[in-house]
Image 1 (cartoon, rainbow, N blue to C red):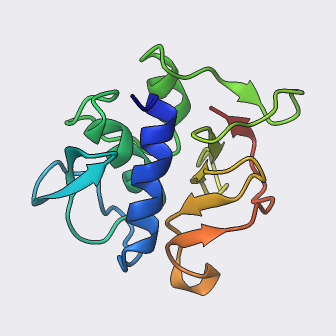
Image 2: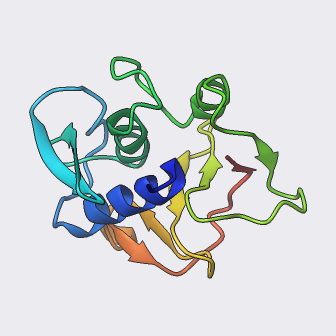
Length: 151
């Protein structure tokens, strides 16, 4: 049986590579669900376009780790996800080594633009939903956003 990390990586990779577009605010509402298979198990995620926090939270909602009706945005994502007991917050300068399924986060605070992406491989490649100017949704090599938190 797959761990929640393996299942999350599988589902996030599907979402980031299946031809969806970036849409600010997309993926947060638990409606218009579509079925996806994660290691042979059916899960449901919102259909349509997504933003970065909508895609990440949709993955963990589909796996039953997050409340389906709570909106998770980068500004409060760390606190909400840590409160589930499945995530531990590590400051970016912590010597913790990321593992597939970990989240790279920069909360939107003040004028700072927030962003979140998922580490999907031991080479720290990531799956993300970002604006078309930055490449759009997809899987890409690690880059420094700059991230401030690892979950």
